[in-house]
Image (cartoon, rainbow, N blue to C red):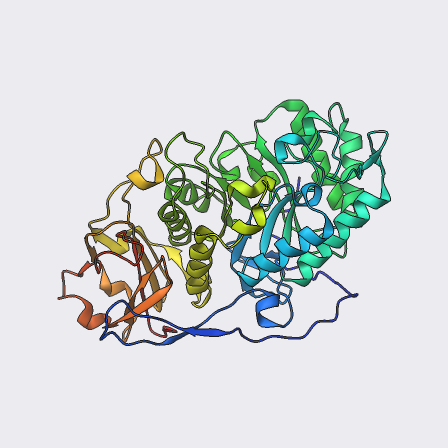
Length: 472
C-alpha cells in the first residue's frame, strides 16, 4: 500500500544553474468603473516570466490539504494537459510549448511517458513522430536510449522552466498496447526503472487515465506504484479513474493513493466537495474537466465562461489548484498559434488573482452564503448550473465568493475578521474593483450583496474577495 500524505521531497537538479526569486512582475488593474480606485497586483508566474529559481511541486502539506514546493511552501497547481508532448513534439517544438506555458504561469502538466493513439501519440507502438521507439522489440524492460534520453531532457527542461510533470509511466491506453499482458512483476520492475530514471526530474507520479477498473489492470498499476516505492521514491502517487468523479470515491484505490484526482465534466463543485470531504484529508485536485474547444457531454463547445466557472468553483470548494486542457492535447496542426488562446489567458488571469492571496488558508464554507445560493446537478451542463460557492479562512482573514450569474446573495459577515475589506474581481480579465470596508458593503444584519452587472466578457459571473490584507 502506498503512503498517505507525504512530506515535502527535495528534487535535486544539480545540473541546473538557478537564481532565487522573491516575486514577479506587476501590472495595473483597469477597473470597470471610471471612478473606482485602482491598485497594482503582483503576478506569481513561471521561472521564464520571473527570471529566477523555478518552484516545483514536490510533496503534500502536513495537514493533507495542499501541495508544497521544495522549500515546504504551499504551491497552487496551475496545470495543463499536453498528454502526447513526449511523442508528438520534436525538441524544438517542445521548447515552444514549454516556454509559452511557463510564461503564462503554468507550473504542472499531465503527460504520458509512453505513447498510444488514444493518448494522442502517432502510433500504438509508442514511437515518436520522428520514429524513436521506446523499447527494443516491444520489451518494456529493454529501453531504447534515444527515446528515453529525449524524454528525460524534455522533462528536465520543463522543470527548469518551473513546470512539474504529473507523469503517467503506464496509463489506461498503453495497458491495451505496449503493456498488454504484462505481469505484475514486469509492471513492478518497470516502475522501479522509471523511478531511477526520473530521480533528478521534477515529477509527481500518476497512472490510470480514462481508466475503468479490472482485476488484472489493477494488479499492474498497483505493482507500478510498488516498484516506484521500491526504488526509494516517495513522491506523491495518484490514479485517474474514468467512471467515478474522484479517486476518493473508489473503495479499492482510496487508500492506495496520496491525493485525489477529481475528474468531472458536470458542474465541478459536486465532485470537488466529495473529494475534499473524504477522510483522511488529502489534496483534492481538479485534474480534468471540460477542455477548451471540446465538450465531452455532447453539449455546445466549451466556452471561456465554462472554463472560468470550473476553476473558481474548484478553488472555492477546496481544490488546491486545477488542470486546464484544450483540444490540442494531441497537438493538432497549428497548435502553436492557439497556445495563447483566450481560454488559456483567462484561466491564467484567474490563477494570478488566487496566487496573490493566501489561498492555502481557505476552507469551503457553505454557511457563509445564507441566501441566493442557487443549485447544481450532476446531469447539468456547466453553464446550466447557477450554484454560488464560498471559502473562508478559519480566522476570518480571507474569504472568496464565486457567483456564477447575476444576482443578490446574502453573506454571514460575522465570519470575517474585523477590518476586512472587499473587492469585486472580473474573472474574465482579472481586474479588481475596490468595494471598500466590509462594514460598508451591506446593510447589517442582512449581508445582502449584489453582483456589479455584466463583466467585461458580457457574462454575469464575478469573484468577491474579502479580507484584512488584500493586494489590490
